[in-house]
Amino acid sequence: MSSVETPHERRPLLLFGATGQVGRELLRALAPLGPVVAPRRDEADLTKPQRLRDVIRAARPIAVVNAAAVTNVDQAEREPMLARAVNAIAPGVMGEEARRVGAVVVHYSTDYVFDGTATTPYDERARPNPINLYGQTKLAGEQSVAASDAAHFIIRTSWVYSADGNGFVPTFVRQLKGSGPVRVVSDQIGSPTWSRSLANTTAAMLRSILLPDNLQLSPEDWGVYHLGGAGVGSRLDIAREVVSALAPLAAEPPPEVIPISAADFNAVAKRPTYSALSNDRASRRFGLRLDPWRLEIRRMLDSGLE
Image (cartoon, rainbow, N blue to C red):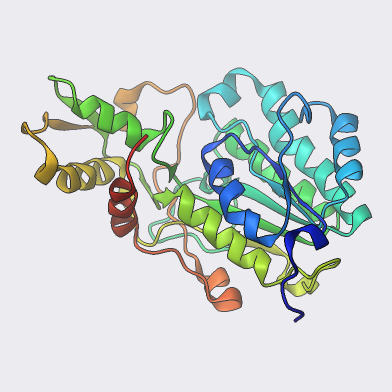
């Protein structure tokens, strides 16, 4: 494989969803691979296929990285047309245009393509069977990328968290500053995944196949890869790990954390009870595996919450 060129000598990487919790980390992680073009939502409206095609053709990227999605599971149920446009149709358009310009597609998908009836982590050979509209549209997006015949990595991940925004971990930390008990769902299991580690692992996968003006990726390496934090846990487990990590620094004892069932949460959409992921394929092909999620939670807290 040829040596890495300086950024100005390379075709750009085109990143969609740069303002999300994964996208923000990808902006940093992808930068050493070449110039990163990250259009704003109004510049690349994923509900308008022709506009999306124009953006990709103008950029002529070496890689199209799609971290954009309707990720709010209940919103997908309430706004099915939007969810289908962004999660199912737009990824296929990206794949078609990527094939035309000779780019690889990296498309993020979800553990929610599974029905949750498993008792051990799902690997890439497991049969998807989504139980909500979010999972259905994300599975359709996977299928549309694969049908485009573009070189592609479809990365399924699970329970992504970050240090900022309104995700589970920063929201829980803010709740700990209150005086009352904090209620946390205890009967759903996943693979908690730090957005920074997910972005770093994605960049490592791309680094191994990108040449200055073309790809070094054989069709047998195309397809689905699972990338989730090693191990399994519930949101209650995450909460308790956060409390344990922050306790030595707290001036006051933390409020009580009370387990509740998913049924008590009164969500619009049904969630899989078990959706942990096995990362075997990425480990075999690229030698990449995310660290145990408990360790990653503490690393994230050490890095500071925004």
